[in-house]
Image (cartoon, rainbow, N blue to C red):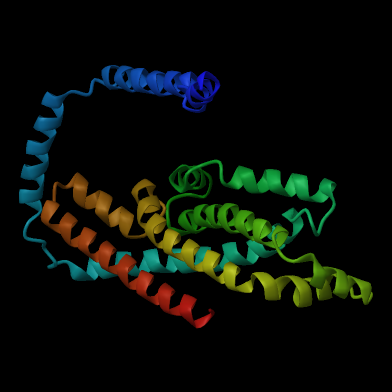
Length: 262
């Protein structure tokens, strides 16, 4: 009986390591609050200022709709062009990074390059391109191409590594070249997932195309930044509503395309 009781006690023994980790996280959270000067008073003050800001943004002013439409069209063009070029560049990168298709001396450097593309937020990359090639949509397109390559190539390579090896072995046994292996053994197994990756990246680029404009890389973000600097808050709300509508429409269209490929 005593042995059974001892077994029960051991089965429900406290996890002191987990408790110490949780306590350390809680203590660091309290420290972070104090280090960042976060307080209930500042939060309450911010709520009041936020309410006044929203009051100045209402009702939205769509009187300058030509300027609004021009910015939205430029953002849409940036997103579509960056997505198309980024997807095309991601195809060979994903193939080169797949360790079940390529030797290590090819896959490892390619994965390092993909990780490098994913290391920075698109806004930071856009700042670099604005400094390098100047203000305008070209900098935004270049920044989002880098972001697209980092995201799609990584997921594409991982999808290839998860495919069934039997079709690969069958096509290779027939003496087919590498291009035939990719076309007949790889792509049929990953095509639906690749379409999903591409559509998600297009959605992401639609959102990011509005952010890169804040640093001078074209699109509706530049219009939004100018409206904020002029304290033209009713026009700001009109721009935000238009951005939300564009993202929502893009989500509907991407869902329709995704269902078409299932």
